[in-house]
Length: 326
Ligand SMILES: Cc1cc2nc3c(=O)[nH]c(=O)nc-3n(C[C@H](O)[C@H](O)[C@H](O)COP(=O)(O)OP(=O)(O)OC[C@H]3O[C@@H](n4cnc5c(N)ncnc54)[C@H](O)[C@@H]3O)c2cc1C
Image 1 (tube, protein in one colour):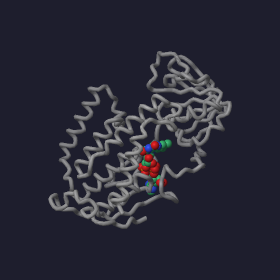
Image 2 (cartoon, helix red, strand yellow):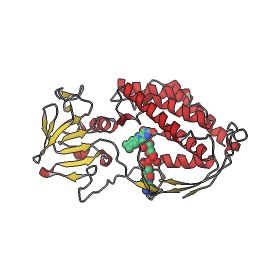
Image 3 (cartoon, protein in one colour):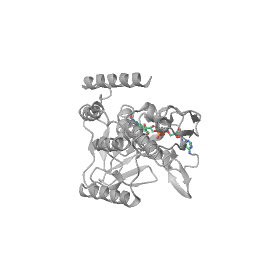
Image 4 (cartoon, rainbow, N blue to C red):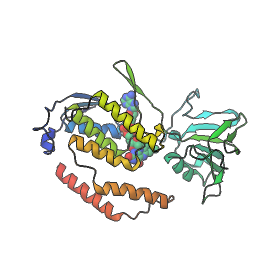
C-alpha cells in the first residue's frame, strides 16, 4: 500500500524551521502494519515529505479497531495467551479472545489482572457468571479476599499461588476456587518481530492515539534531519537518569511505559523538539476529567460526564483544523 506524498511540510506548516534549520532530507520509509498508529505514522511521514509504503498482513486497514467476531485458534494449546482446554474441562484463554458475556452464563470465572481489560470484562460478565474472581498483582498476599463493593458475586484476590488438575485454583491470600474459566487479562504479548541489521526488533507496545500522533511527527522530523539526535552517550545518561527517578519514586521498571498524567509532558517535549504546538489545554483537561469521572462513576462514566465545555472546545478545535486542512 503506497501512500502518495502530500505537499512539502514547509508548505503545510509554515512554522517548521525548514529555512533556518538543518537541511531537510526525504527518505523512503516502510511502515509495517496498517493499524491506527501506522496510518497516522504514514500520514505524518508523507506530510514531512518522505516516500512511504505501508505493509499490512491482514486483508483490511485499521488493526485493532476493525472488529471481528472471530477469535484466534490455537489447536495445540501451546500458547498460554490463547484459548486452551485444561483438565476437568476448565478453559483458559486470553482477554484478546473475549467478545461477549453470554458464554459465561453460570460459570465460575477467574480474571487474572486488574487493569483496563479486567475492569471492563468483570463488569460485563458479572450479570451472567455465577462468580467472578479477580486476581490482582497489587492486592497484598496476606489480605483476605474481599467482595467488590456493589457486587454480590465478585471478589478481589491476591495473585494465584497454584492451579490444580481438578480445576481448583489457590490464591496467595489463602482462599481457593473451583473455576470453570481462567481469563488472562494480563496485557498483550509481542505478536511479531522484525529482523533489522541481524537484530530481532519486537513490535508490540500498545500506544494510545494522542501519543502515537506526536511520536510519528517526531520520527518523521528526525528522519528528515531535524532535530539532530543527541549522542548515544547522552541518550544512555538520560535513560539512567529516568530510571533513577523511577527508583526514587518507588516505581518498578515494568511501569516505565506507564506515563499517566506525565504523558502530556512527554508529548509536549516531543512537540517542542520537532516544532509543533504543544497538546491543546482542553485535551489535557479532558483526560484528567475523564479519569476523575471514571473513578467517581465506575459503572456509567462512558455515558455521563460533566465536561461539556471541553467537548465544545474540542469540537471548535476540530472545526478549525478541518478548515485549515482544506
Ligand atoms: C482492547 C483495547 C482497547 C484499546 N482502547 C484504546 C483507547 O480507547 N484509546 C486509545 O488511544 N488506544 C486504545 N488502545 C490502544 C491501541 O493499541 C491503539 O488505539 C491502536 O489500535 C494501536 O494501533 P497500532 O497500529 O499500533 O496497532 P493495531 O491496531 O493492533 O494494528 C496492527 C496492525 O499491524 C498488522 N501487522 C501485525 N504484524 C504485521 C507484520 N509483520 N506485517 C504486516 N502487518 C502486520 C496487523 O494485521 C494490524 O492490522 C486499545 C487497545 C486494545 C487492545
